Image (cartoon, rainbow, N blue to C red):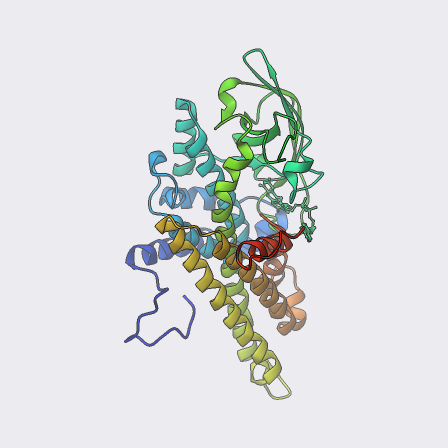
Length: 396
Ligand SMILES: Cc1cc2nc3c(=O)[nH]c(=O)nc-3n(C[C@H](O)[C@H](O)[C@H](O)COP(=O)(O)OP(=O)(O)OC[C@H]3O[C@@H](n4cnc5c(N)ncnc54)[C@H](O)[C@@H]3O)c2cc1C
């Protein structure tokens, strides 16, 4: 993992136990074999999804990590963190996709109620299909429950959905999309009255359009337009009007997975910077021998280690069934900010080389931006910690 842990006589309490170390080694092996750096850069440039990598990861059972046991899942959230961190350090777009894949698998496995839903959950765990999750909308992602325009109305035998979703990850490769739609007017709380639907992508009236993005270019980010899309009653996942509350149950885990992706990016950027400043000389000595860059890299290592500790504490709480929300929020905040800073520093210390498109530094810098505002903007993450941890009045 990271260099400089405790000496062997004092085992690192955060070190992977043997099974998780094997899982980490497997992800690294598959990535090295199928998606080495040149291919990652080429696919990023071409804005192409790495189907071969997904299939190779599926073949060794990676998408069962931390998934519900009823659908064939194994292990717990800690296994997902290992997978996502390793993908974050290399094919970061696949890390972003994997986070979405794990979340949608959890949702369908938990709230599905038909044999078809159970079959879909099993295929997601096996990694033989893809699904997407469409919550955010053009009018807003942060307070999406309040501004949600997508509506579902009852029709005989089912529901008719109309509206527009935005930023839906992987919709171009999905078999079906979990769509959240307002089914009852806002009464006491905007969180009430929203329902989850499983909508097949070939449903008449559904249109998917990719959006060109700054980063995570190896996974499509899409607009999904629903123009009087009719689904039957079985398309409802979970309970009518309680969809938003059902989503909240996956939020902490998504935040933790985002932290893991950022730790992967941060580690990769730090490794790149350390290797470069150790070799490259200015004024007759390595750049890393100057105090200013060295201290920045030390600060990055400290910040990443702090975020790592928060992430594992939160994960251990989740596994123990204790509330993990505050520590998960802290981990996401700390990891995303540390990784963004070190990705920027790596570009700086690489000078002109750090400005070349197919050098990993620029891609890491672009990719990691995502997690400063997603799945929840860091301002909202701070609000959450302020209220829940410090007991401050709810901030808006
Ligand atoms: C590559 C990518 C993939 C995504 N994948 C998915 C997906 O699969 N499914 C899905 O549903 N969504 C997805 N999203 C959407 C993502 O979750 C939203 O972008 C995010 O929730 C922010 O919503 P927004 O973009 O509408 O920004 P807004 O809600 O408009 O917020 C904009 C900015 O306002 C500021 N802000 C917000 N609230 C506060 C506050 N309380 N106090 C102070 N400042 C505040 C923050 O700086 C924030 O970044 C994805 C987005 C991207 C870019």
